[in-house]
Amino acid sequence: MIPIQAAIDEYIASTRKEREPRISMSGLGNCMRKLILTERKAKHFDFDARNYRVFAMGFQVEEFVLKSLRAKGIVFKEQEAVEYRGITGTYDAILRDDESDALTLIDVKSVHSMKFNYLNKEGVDKNYAMQLWGYQKALEGKYKLSHIPRIFYVSKDDLRIEDLGVPRSDWGDKVDAKIDEIEKWRASDDLPPEKKERDWECFVCNKKSGTKAWCRYISNCPVMYKEYQDKGGKQ
Ligand code: SF4
Image (cartoon, rainbow, N blue to C red; front, side, top):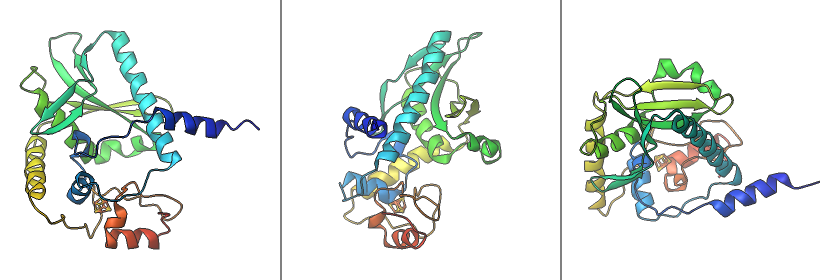
């Protein structure tokens, strides 16, 4: 039998670049404890081969969407590195409207098609909104952007797209408040408190068994870790 799965996993591992343990735009929606643990290079679990396959698959789908937008000729700028108050990241694209000069920042997120069953009811993921607004704030002084950046959710199963705007409302203020808090904890020797109840900032898988936590720092959170193990979590 040809070991195809192993070949794919090896290929993904060979193309993987380890990231600097620093707080980036994509982390703005993460819990403060995890962000500070990351920066302090705390001991953590490694992702497994399946986790990396999920990331690789998401990247392929997102890149396909960007390719389609390029072919349509509506990409004004893409994948520039940006910085806002010391937090860095690389946004996906700024699109030009066909019929006007309006420029809109977009971020592409690949999801399972089941997500579309409740996306319109629940609205955009809060951590995605934080990331998007981090980019928006970094870019506002540079380009004349629409005040409603957008998240393009794309299904990995059939490339269906749901395009949701994320108006300023209080996301801009939330980004600044989060960076204020990051700066406060950076100046402290203490660790931000562990979450006692899971919320949208805490990336621990809810499934009852057979899964790994998406927060690699979960072993630094005794309450979360116990609850996770009690439900059959593997790490
Ligand atoms: S387990 Fe939850 S509370 Fe603990 S560091 Fe991870 S995200 Fe934060």
